[in-house]
Every structure is written in structure tokens, then in C-alpha cells.
Length: 334
Image 1 (cartoon, rainbow, N blue to C red):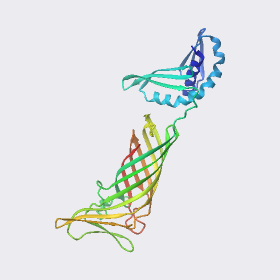
Image 2 (cartoon, helix red, strand yellow):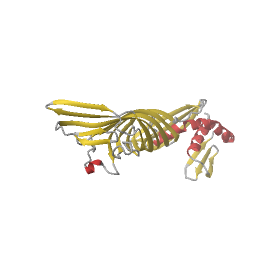
Image 3 (tube, rainbow, N blue to C red):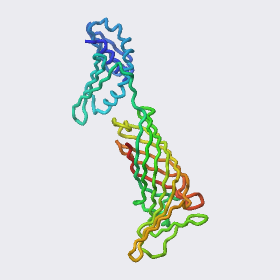
Image 4 (cartoon, rainbow, N blue to C red):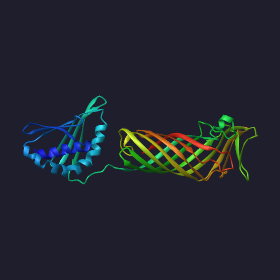
């Protein structure tokens, strides 16, 4: 039995998980040593020959790189369990073998980790690429109030005004439970007006909202705006282990974004004498060329809930109502 190698692996695990300050060391017999730490934890060392302890310090140092390379996986596996019953560490033929016995959802399970000590030290993956998809609902505030509250002609439907975005980015874990997302996406914002007879007219100086006087059966009236966006979102992660881009089940983030408008249009749908009519016109309508704002993210497993607020206004200053868009919805990152 390679006793000293088994000892170095065991001691390496203990050294990585806690700093031992020996409070009490007892020699129970000629081949057993029990070390008690200040936290009342105990480690038992069993020797075939008490002289083996002389080279223990050197062998601990030689195996520490291997222990560090599997430590992330070991800690994650243990945190994922409801309780840990036993951890067995062996070094057989230059391979570290770790068996973890525990309880998960009232069921006894055993998990295994193997690692070749001759391999180069492994590091936890800190950089993940991802794709993302957003679906949310839009509105806007004017001087801190919803236009619906004052029955403004440009009031939008709370349910039916939506945004869709698709994009991707990189997530960098600069610490075990902290990351930063760098992302880019294309988004399409649709503002469906509460009054389906609302008309948006661009003059030489500004944009004017009015009520159509044709007396038709009005079906739809909306403004659509596409953007190219960049975002920067620091996040903290907590909870049980997850996989892929999400290292933990839960996450919280607060970030910023900026966007460039790629176009704009208005669309009306109505009926006259049972004949459906459609009007679709592309134009800038004095929509702001740039947008910027702040957003918050809360995630559970692989689904994120987000809310955003534009610090910029939807229309250029002095060219339309001072409307700050807001949005909330779901984000799927994979």
C-alpha cells in the first residue's frame, strides 16, 4: 500500500479546504496520529511505519498542483449535496481517486472524481460564449408617469407592445461567484397604441400624434424601432452548482447598455366597408439615433428575468414627447 501517497492526497485536500492550526496532536499508538484543529475538526493519519512521516512535507508539496486542479470540481460536488457523509481520497498508480458519499433529496448517492497527477494542472473554465434570446413588454414614462394616466394620444397597450432580441456574447468569471457579461444583440421594439385610430405625423419641425377622423373600423396602430445594442453586465452567482455558462442556480446582475437605431416605421390596419386596408411607412419620425440605459437581471437555472430603463428619450429632444422607454421580460441564455 502506498501509504505516504494516500496521506499526501488526503492532507492536500484538507489544506485546500481549510487552514490548519494544530491545537492538539496526539500519538495514540505506533502507527496512528490524530490532529485536532482549532475548529474542532479532526484528521487521522495511519502509518505503516512511523518513520514515513519524515518525508511527508516534501510529498505534500509535490502533489499540491494536482490537488488544486481538481479542487473546484470537488468543492462544487460537495456543495451540491444536502449533506456529506464521507469523503475518501486515494492515490493509486499516480491517479487521485475521490469518492464522495452524501444525501441529495433524501437519497443516498456516491460521486467519483478521478485525476491523473501527471496531467497539467486543470483550471476551472472562466470564459464562456453564449447565445441569448429576449422576449419582453414595452411601455414608456413621461416625467415619471405613464402616458395612460393622462390619456395621452400616444399611450400604448401594456399587453401587446413587445420587444424581441437575439444576440450573443461572452461571460467572464473573474471570481468563483462573480462574472461580467459582454454582449451584443439586435432588438425590435413595437409600441402598439391604446387608441387604434392614433396617427403619427412627421412635420418639418416635430412629430405630431392625432386621432384619425375617417370613422373606419380601426384594428391596429403601432410604431416599430430596430436597434443594434451593446451591453456590459456584472453579476453575482449563488446557490447550488449548475453547468455550462451558469455555474450556479441563481444570479443577480446590474448593468448598462447602449444602442444604435437601424430604422423605424409606423403601421396602421383598419377596415372601410368591410375592406381591410394596411398602411406601412418607413421613416425616422425624429426617433433618437442613439439609446442608452440601465438594466437589472435575476436568473434561476437557465432562465433570466430582466427589466430595463432608457435614460435617453425615444424621440430626439424637442422633436416629440419626452418618453423614456421601459421594458421587462424573459431572457434565455444558452
